[in-house]
Amino acid sequence: MNLGEKVGYIVDEVDTARFTFVSDRQRYPPRHEYLVIPGVKEREGEEFREVDVLAQVTRLVNYSELVSQQLSLRELEVLISRYPTDPKVYGEAKILGYLDENGDVKLPRSAAVPGQELFIAPSSLLEEFFSEDPENCIEIGRLITRPDVPVRIHPNGFRRHVAVIAQTGAGKSYLVGLILEKLLPMGATIIVFDPNSDYVRLKLDKDGNKTDIADFVTVYRPPGVKGRRFSDEEIGGAESYTINFSSLEREDMFSLFGIPDKWVRIRDAIETALDNLHGIYQPSDLYRELEEMAQNNDGDAQRALPYVRRVMDFPIWGSKDIPIEELIKPRKLSVIDLAGLQRDIMQYILERTLREAWNKATSGELEYPLFIVMEEAHNYASKKNKSRASDIIKRIASEGRKFKVFLILVTQRPGKVDDDVLSQCNSQIIMRITNPVDMQAVRNSVEALSQDLFEDLPGLNKGEAIIVGELTKTPAMVKVTGRISAEGGSDIDVVEALKAAKKAAETLDAASTSIEEIREGETRSEW
Image (cartoon, rainbow, N blue to C red; front, side, top):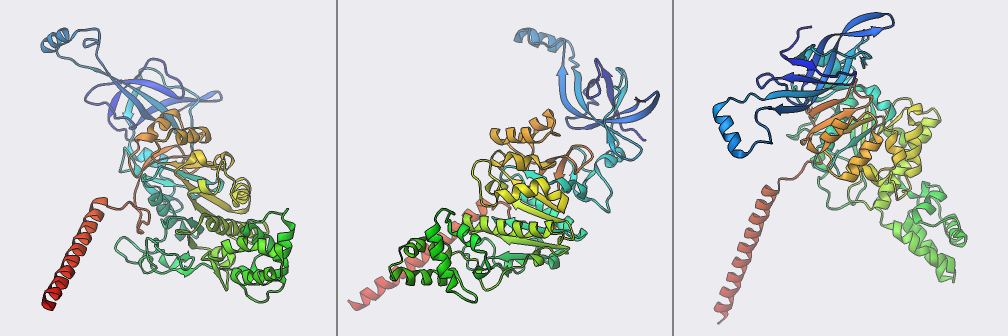
């Protein structure tokens, strides 16, 4: 191995997890830099072998015995003017491990010794740690401190679910979009529940041209939703997402209406009305049938009307369903755009789709791995407020890996996510977080997150992430790069938006003034 620049020597007490080193002002490595201790003697039974141990700088201190806080300002000025100050540089580093003969990362059971030389880790060694098989892995960026070293995550890391955690504006939708456009060509089946239209532009690049994955992406949208951020044309086309109301099980209908089991008489009235309907019918048809019953002095039918009325305006009712068989085809990415829908409808669509997919999986009809992306997961798998989808999400979280169903939970509020669900995610990609409650939730649920990485979370820049768990051999600090498709969740340029608003206002003012002048002229001519 060709070693990098020597930066100093290990000093003081050394254990198998951490060590202290001394450097100088000309050669000290910056915080987060990767170091290598060559030739550490690792004991294996009765034998020893030499291994190259990778470490990462966690702390740096400049220290001077001459310039100390016990001196007065005047004393400091005299000393500094007469004697050159040459601060000592102390550093602390944590051990990341070494590579065994199979390329796996192992934590050493033997410690380095004081006095051993310390070097900057060469890029070739870092690539062995952070860049797995390029043919079968997903490149999602570069090491923050070493932009020449790519970071690749292994698809097997998704087997036990993944949580993507970041506060708003940290770049999580960019990251998830990048993962999706890399997973899809590998043959992945993906369903995305998208409450904010963050992933509806995956078919187009930033210039509006078709991406290489465009033919394998379908965006489903409930019809009639107004005020969407992107039109169908702006996302490269969309298909209508509708549900055939008449195909629903009656228990599903009662659940949608919000009518509990104990309201037997209201349920019986609805059952009677349903028995009078035939063929394809909608909630409005059921409502009219109940109205006729109510006009004949059926009080239970009268009481049922408000519950049926509340779902009549849901923009999801149509003459056909989107069959689950269509969504679970291999090498297909289905984005279900939930933007603009009431929360009840979002919950219903999510729960219905998950239940149908889970039934396919548990009956042995799911042939290929299915990746389910849930944006704003805290709204569906809430710690405090149980949603209609809570039970099926918990079941998939605990048993999904046995049936090839894998969750990718995306949230900016991990403190609100059900602990049982979050703890089932054995890999995490964590971006900038500053909220104390959310930071504590991450600390409690992410066993592989060391204290120093935890303390780094508030200081991450946009697009930077810490990856822990089975996605990588060892925790990695990454600058996420390389997405091709256009972003749906990127922030607007407020300055440019305000300029456009100002220009529009000035145009309206000018038009209004012109109209007033014309009216005044017409009035004078009448005189």
